[in-house]
Image 1 (cartoon, rainbow, N blue to C red):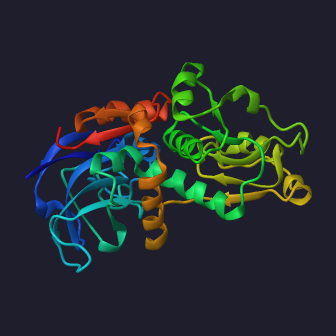
Image 2: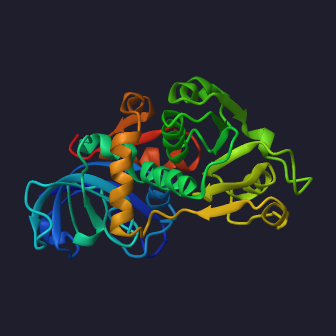
Length: 328
């Protein structure tokens, strides 16, 4: 038997309810590898799954948690043996397949990657899906070539933005961090940001399709009108790695930045990344993310804290990374 945060739906009212329950291994969904989960994280999608509307969940009962790290317990795949440390992100785990908010998980072997040297399971989830997404964004910008000028990170107080800020600062770039929370200035400076940009400075709808060339690259974790505004401020040939839709899926922009400045808009999706990309990104995380700054991003949590924290992340009240100790 093991504990899990289970979301159930009342069919008559359509409302959902999340609570910690005891399950057995027989309850787990099919898969080749069973993992004794040690840590998971809290992401925006998890808040949607836990919330009263059910969000992204397709069927009930459901165990949320879009990532996890732990130890292989049983395996039908030759790539993994009992005792191996593994990490999982993406593949709709926690949405269409039971996820990491449980002391056990059963998944397809292809969804896992070995935990890289230099990381333990808690550190891996301090990074989590948000950190993996941030590293994929940085790698995409590097592949395109980063231009001269400071680099912009929007949504810098969140999970993706926090890790992107720390990675880019460690790589030696001058990072301008955008936040709507002035009280987070010290936190972002501690991650390596050299400039704090108030969110309202970029919140206005674009008035001119092109503004002065300001940014050599951008990791955008917001989207919507802010992304449209940023596109007109990019240096010639610069790239924007867009990773989030917190500001909305609509892009009220013109084609002018793309035609006259050669701006590149790179879409980053961590959900179904090929194995080689995920492994490369995790190995880069183990070497290029400043672990001495990682603890500044972390808020510890237990399974019973998640209904409250799920509401907090949807309302913008979560800073950095929430690491869930499923055995606490």
